[in-house]
Image (cartoon, rainbow, N blue to C red):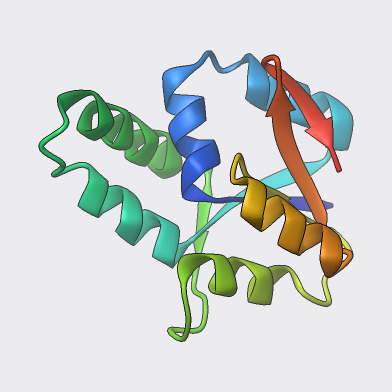
Amino acid sequence: MFEVVFDTSFIMTLAEKSSHIIDDIIRLLDPVLFVVPDCVVEELSRLSFSKHVKKSKFALLALKFVDEKMKVVETPKVGSVDDRIVSYARGRSEVWVATMDRKLRERLFREKLKCITLSNDKVVLC
């Protein structure tokens, strides 16, 4: 079974766009387990209190999505959110990291870790 680990940028995009993205990931990687690091949940919680109404709305939708469809996993309490996501994925061949963050994608590529992103609302495995 594959695990797809979501970062904040990808979950916020899911909240903003339709759920066909999840269906596309399932179609490509079935069977799959959707995972969210605890540090991403913390970041979404902070964003849900943002003064930017649109951002806080999408963060709340993302948190609801996490509660309904994803497993929250603990990560080491050291480093940035990206550090913690990379640390979780390192050494696990079944893990894909879903991100919209270019710097994180480049880092995953350098470390030969698998990633998922979107291009023109289409799922891209990289």
